[in-house]
Length: 105
Image (tube, rainbow, N blue to C red; front, side):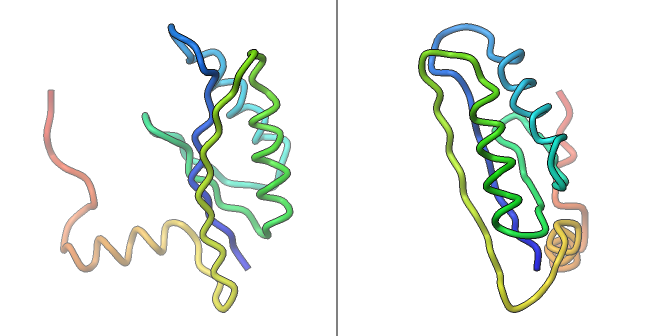
């Protein structure tokens, strides 16, 4: 079974949060999870719910602040085993192209 999650964890304060977010991401390295970070959140792929929740707890605790905000969305499909790349490939097959824009800045 594979469990997916969308995790956003950050201190509640003004200013740059890169150092704090990096600490949370580094905490994930202690667990049997795959992850990819983007500007809004981190997608996590774990072998089971217990591993996922342990990794998320570590990421939350890694931020040293008076107040921490964590948002977690879990996709626990218990009847099939899929990996994250297969989910994206399925959408791209429907689109007939990569699932990202070609916009440049």
